[in-house]
Amino acid sequence: GQNIDQPTEMTATEGAIVQINCTYQTSGFNGLFWYQQHAGEAPTFLSYNVLDGLEEKGRFSSFLSRSKGYSYLLLKELQMKDSASYLCAVPDSNYQLIWGAGTKLIIKP
Amino acid sequence: GAVVSQHPSRVICKSGTSVKIECRSLDFQATTMFWYRQFPKKSLMLMATSNEGSKATYEQGVEKDKFLINHASLTLSTLTVTSAHPEDSSFYICSARDLQWDRGEQYFGPGTRLTVT
Image 1: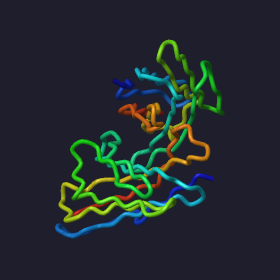
Image 2: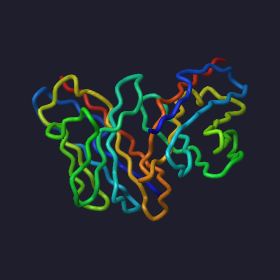
Image 3: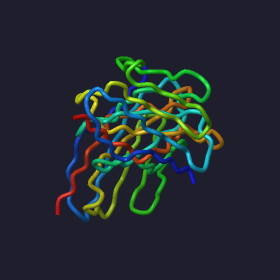
Image 4: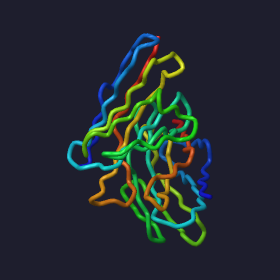
């Protein structure tokens, strides 16, 4: 079967760094996505990893280890607007996304 | 590129009426679109996968006769909530895949907030 696990909720301080982890078990591997979803809004694409290593994109970076079935999203210089849910997703063999339950990130001043 | 629109953004209807929600891919062709439902403070829940020119595939527990899906063209899918009841009040979101560059990424519409009174 396929399964994705990520923490339900995390709290961090404005200006700090936070790492949101995601572990997955899939029968094959076609990459891993991270999406951001603000309350009351639809998800928006953040990153896609298909090779091992770190992909940096401004304040956000995403890391993948295929051998460990593990990814993380790293958010630097946290801003209040980063308060949102962060969703990890992997495509199945038909390239249909299997979603994690999402991690709600709370930023405190 | 890869813009998905959804209409209406908000709708309030009376119990027993039907509501149609449209999902359009504006600048790409989407043979596959997805319909999700999200209750407050809950996870995204896939309702059905909509394939152009064929019947939609519904997830377990989703009534196909209540949630009618039509994917008549490569850029348009519609979800009709029939005989809506207050428990159908939710945030409905569609997404689409761009098969030209397909790696599984889904582009989301802005969502439709349905309130049934």
